[in-house]
Image (cartoon, rainbow, N blue to C red; front, top):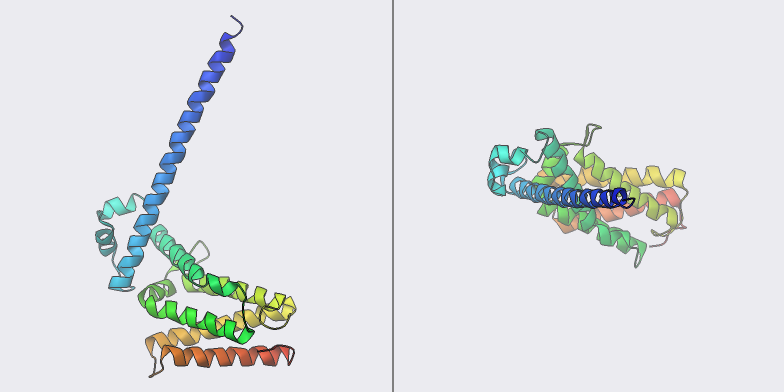
Length: 223
C-alpha cells in the first residue's frame, strides 16, 4: 500500500516528460519553419528589390499572406527577422577574415574584397537592410552590421593581428571610423559607381584604411 503514491508520482513525472518532449519538438518545428520563411523572404527581396511586398514574399514562400503571418507577430517582427538573418549571413561570409593569417595589409585587402563581393551579390538585400529597423532600439540593420564588424576589427587592432598592438581607447574609435568610411564609400559606389570597378574600389579602400592605421599607430605597424 505504501508504494502506491510513489508509483503514481513516477507515472505523473513520466507523463510530464512526454509532454515536455512533444512541446520541445513542436517548438523546434515552428522555429525551423519560421527560418524557411525568412530565407524565402530574403530571396524575394533579392528578386524584387527593397520595395518587396508581403504578397511577393508569401508567394515565394508558397503560403498565403495570413499563412505567412501565423509565424510572425506582424510586419515589424517579419522585418526584424529578415534583418537578423541577413546580418547573420554577412557576418558568416566574413568569418574567414576574423582568423588572422598572412601580412596585415593582405588581411585588410581580403576583408574589403569579401565585403564588396557580398555587397555586389546582395545589393537589393543591402538596400532593404538600410531602411529596416533591427531589434527594439530603432537602429537600421546596416548600423547593426557596422557595429558587429567594427567590434571584430577593434579586437584585431588590440591583439596585434593587424601589425601592432593598439590600446583599446585608440583601437575602438579607429575601428568604428574605418568601418564607417568603408560602409559609406561602398554604399555610394553601389548606387553610383562612377565607372569604378569592384577591384579598383577594393584597392582604393585598402590603401586608404592602411594609411589611416599607419598615421594613427606610427611606424610600429608593418605591412
